Length: 75
Image (tube, one colour):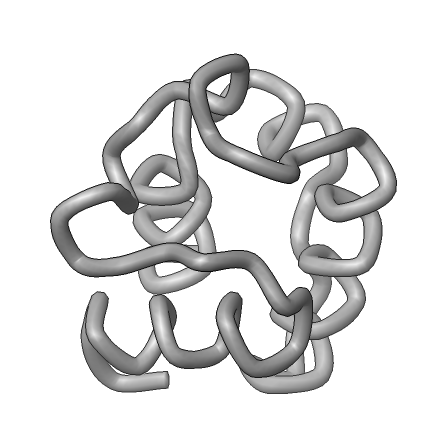
């Protein structure tokens, strides 16, 4: 996962959500199909992809998938 585009592809492939580079900044309450189970699944996928732990409390504070990408890329 080297870029936001890689992250978007990961979300689409692993979670099956119709996310694009244009919608990655959309708030979770406006993201079609999003629920809390996706957050947990995404955390597991990101930990696998980055080979390091991701803080669940930090993920819960993220306002969008773009925020989660920033956490994962900068963690």
